[in-house]
Amino acid sequence: MVARENMAKMKAQKPSQDEIAKALGALKRARPSLTPDDFAAPLLDWYASHGRDLPWRKRWPELTPAYDVFLSELMLQQTVVATVIPYFERFKSLWPTISDLAQSSEEALLKEWAGLGYYARARNLRKAAIAIVNDHDGRFPEDEKALLTLPGVGPYTAAALSAFAFDKPAIVLDGNVERVMARFAGLITPLPALKSELRAVYPRLAPRAQHSDFAQAIMDLGSSICIAGTPRCDICPLAPRCVMAHKPEASYLPVKPKKQPKPKRQGVIFVATKQGKAVMMRRDAKGLLGGMMGFPTKGWESSKEAMGATDLGIKDAPFAADWRPLNQEVRHIFTHFELSLRVYHTTYEGEDLPDGLTLHVPDDVGLASVFAKVWQMVAASD
Ligand code: SF4
Image (cartoon, rainbow, N blue to C red; front, side, top):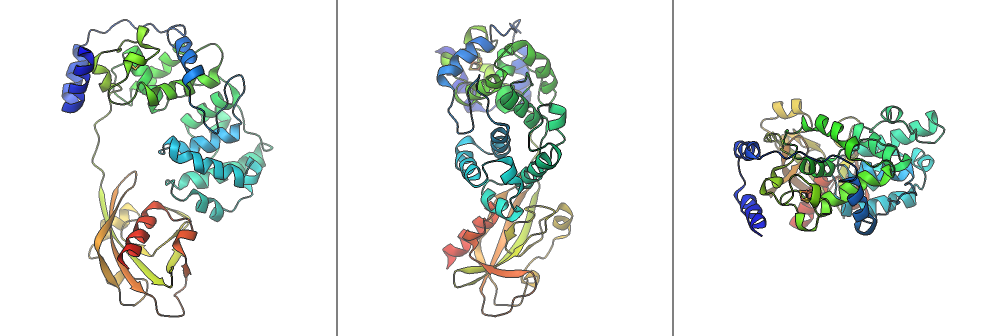
């Protein structure tokens, strides 16, 4: 009870990085018990009755098809499970196999991906499907090294494919796994250096079989019990052997590096409407939101452009018209910068648009989130 009160108090106070380091340094480090019997066994027991049923997930000894692992893992990067489920199901109904996906057009795929963000993932998904069909006879390689040669496959995705689809003892480290293991073993090394420590700890905690369930079980525990912030140690199956169980300092682990503020960029965007449609353009294949449909915009799409973007305004419009600024700006956060967009609107009266511009119903083309926000604001202003 006292421990829980202390945890809540620490959460409310939001200590500085220096205070966290001091609190963790003062902890008497217990000698962690790093055996599968202490970690994997109770974890897998818990998973058997409490693990989530997900549309892409099979339970050991059944294995999830590699295509399903790949699709779901790419979608889950930077996106929560509840958002991914309908996208995964739609992709599987449109492109049931990796060969079907390899034959898709980039345009169709980007349209279906709209709203998930980080569109490079969608392009990589298709490129990887083509590589698997052309270079691997339509079958995913099982080996992590070979998987790493596929577009969009980094160390985490290669390990997840290897473990979930092929039951290999791969080291699958995501944010949930890092948190649960750092707390269980009392590892106070800050990220990212913590990762190499975890690579040594992971095999000591892993089971001798059932590799496909192991990391997925940790992820489920990490998203429901050993959650970010105050963990729910009172209902955790790992509590009897966990170094940080019931300790208020558990909420500090894993220790994160200091966050740098995101740079800010400013831009202008132009929306000309005509009878429910808007003037749009297909963006360059290379670069941010490459290959997607969007409204003409300027000033923010690369760091070089952002640095040189001063005095943006109606002079940057794609054609002369009665452009009027909306009262509010659109704000959007990308992974590496924050964007403020000044929105200009006009009613398009002409017949012939300049090259590269065409009229579309924006909701039908699969808008990226930033353009969807702009379109909503224009629609609300009418
Ligand atoms: S006992 Fe608490 S800190 Fe340890 S793994 Fe479980 S929820 Fe996390």
